[in-house]
Length: 387
Image (cartoon, rainbow, N blue to C red; front, side, top):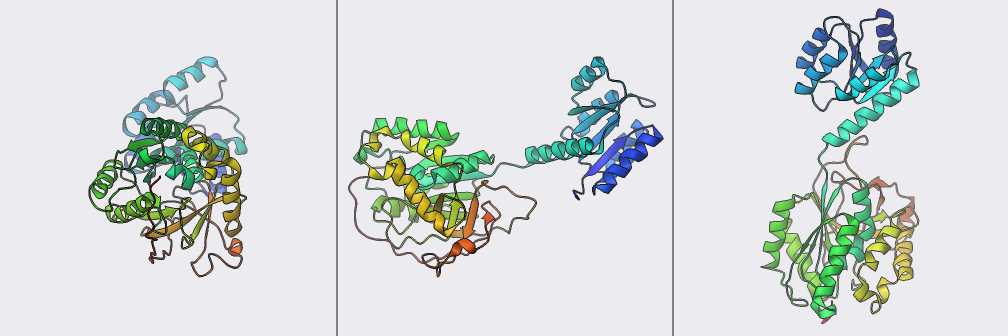
């Protein structure tokens, strides 16, 4: 095990200090050991550490007094307090001083390593800005049908999800009903919803559509955008795709989900495993009650059968397909980055519909994953009068 964590140990007992240093070095950590609180504070002024491990009874000032000074300059660095005196008052004082953990001596190696790794991992996760994912659709329920499971996985991974729906879907039902359903689905997902009121079946590929999308992009700062494919029979879906392509040109990643009206030219090159998130997707679709009785593709068996089919090209039991159009970011390091928690298997367009791409290695879908997009579009001109 080699984490490389830098740990400041403040311990005035020579034997205990050697013990701590030995344990940390053996697991690949880099300890700085001192018995003086003042030396520890001086070290913190010039050195970045991942965690501080301190005794309470120290010369010159107590460990708790030292914590108070550390919190002024290094408020996010986790601190573990250790003592040989197992008293409730010490534990209470440590918590009041905002220590992250309180350990009684003697401390066993597995316990010490587990605490350090847990606290450092938590601190690093808190310091990492959440990835913002923007999903754009023409009508209520378009997004949830296409990538409801993927968005649920994003939320489970701590990503911020934003939904932009361009119309209230008046041609496919009562606009007020569909608005309420959209709000309910967004609440279930924990997403921020932008619901616009462009005319259903007459959405433009230019302004005001482009302007609306640009405004939401500027306000939310996404690094991943999902939208309709150009390979779709519905004119609103194609228009939104074209508008998104223009309005999100500076967003690192753009990928297209499958709609029920997608044509046979829809050729995905990424397959996101949504194992563990199918119930979440079905719950999102149930929110659209006005549509469930008139749209066969909203039936649970239909939804699961579709996801089951796409899993043949990737890992897991259920998958959602994506046409990745653009990804200009760097490859995510194996030990860093943010992912959906779902598995994504890359498949080239030459093999997307034949062979056994399930044998290809999976990668985590995140803002730093590099894709090879196919930029060929063949939209169908057939017009739809219902959304």
